[in-house]
Length: 351
Image (cartoon, rainbow, N blue to C red; front, side, top):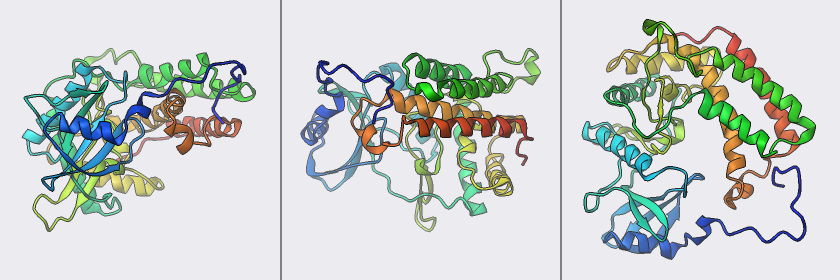
């Protein structure tokens, strides 16, 4: 059941088709053909909810990945800035998968969709319980951030309290996405969490003392195990490959580390030590950022609920997230936000 409090009247017209319903296999293949790439008919949808991404086998026996960007999510300038960052990383021999260029362009248009094409890279999730793997991943994150710190994003937004927290809360409430029987409790828990985050440098006001300000830089933005493809190290170019810079934003370095941590406090501390040991072979890491891990986790939780609600008109979302929107879901979110308030009050991890 969709997460609405009020059902539409019986006489309401049928909802308009979602743009992605027009993205048939023929449209995908025709888009590639417009660039001189001819598929052999084999096409596999890859795991992506925000965009539509396909692995396509070509007649010359090569394989590419084509991404069709969600309409109206990013502007062309924002997409091109992501591409530029990926190409900077690739030029510096950082194993980040960058888009291919055709006629000096990386962003293309077909049938009303913006799309890009990248080389196919296989691999599996990294074994993050292995200290050497963590150190290896940390080294490349340090290299990514060394390049990310060279210049700022001009068009890409920041990951901060306003964009991920306040805007998400306000949208959910103004669109009546939280059922009335739990709305007051959820709003109270959310506000308590946001007030705690506002006291950190994720808030709107930076530290008045310039020396105390944490430095922001261009980030991958969504470094979780699914966005790292690990290939055998006994092969040329083996090790981690970073994919999907679609969420690249401006923010603090720790954003690209914390989602790789799991388990109890002792386990997370050990994992963090491995990542930072590798990271600091290429770039210093400001330990003060460790206090932002739980605030960043909290912002992601709030933003995730808003993301699901905003995307509900996309038919793939009700199919894959049928549990979203019920009172039980929001009760679980209330408890999670209360737990996060406790976590934010604890001493941060150390490394």
